Image 1 (cartoon, helix red, strand yellow):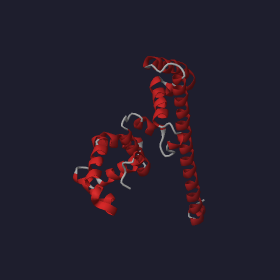
Image 2 (cartoon, rainbow, N blue to C red):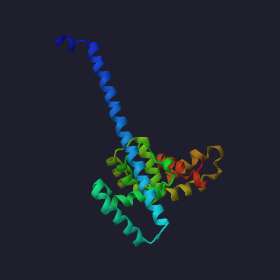
Image 3 (cartoon, rainbow, N blue to C red):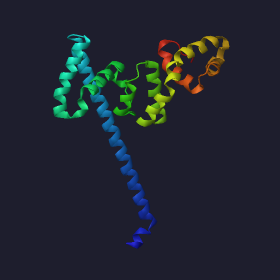
Image 4 (cartoon, rainbow, N blue to C red):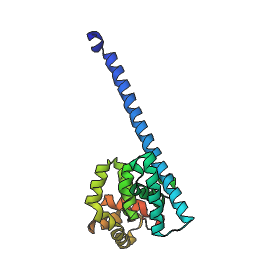
Length: 204
């Protein structure tokens, strides 16, 4: 046995198998998360489409969700309580195109993102979370510490864009500099710019 333990080839074999199992574990976790998020999106879609075919009043919607929660909890567990069903409904409303859901984010990440009403801020945090690989705890901390900066970022960004209009080919650099002078950061300006291009406000 000692001879086997001291054999570098065997140690290499162990390392290869460890890497294989770690990759498989990560793949399984990502697959489960993706399946959960997409399923919850479908649940939200069914709820919204049912409401649109019936009565859109708030009290009616509340009654539907409470009815569903009462029955679904019995069969599928506490994860289908009224609070989570409302989040699933919101998931569909905030991301009507299913393809915009991120395979890198778990349902726990979306729990935080769906509580952000401001779309610019929500998109910014989603993008940063994907790029930086934030855990849910890191995402929560970022939201709690940087909320004011991002929520007010679009207004400050618009002012910086207006002030830098004459910069020609150097507009991109100029608007970031003006934005920073007004109290923002180049990183935040870049994040906001990447999420405003659809509205025609972007500088690139």
